[in-house]
Image (cartoon, rainbow, N blue to C red; front, side):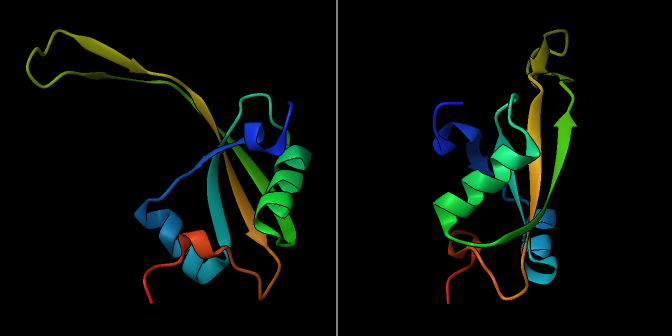
Length: 100
């Protein structure tokens, strides 16, 4: 990895990740395939200026689906790696917070 911005690709915002951010103080990111827990921890601490308590990694497998118009056409979504970052109590990332 060259920089911390190569490790973190994008935040994953779903209903489950919003619940985790609000109640469990956990934030979900899509990360590079080569990223390790230590690299993700350093990247989040550097970019968002927070203290990370724990990092969990999940390899999401590729999925196959069909297109709506042509049911025979199969599409394959690529696999990716997901990181669930738990912050220390009292820490938050403002990017995930709603409008106040």
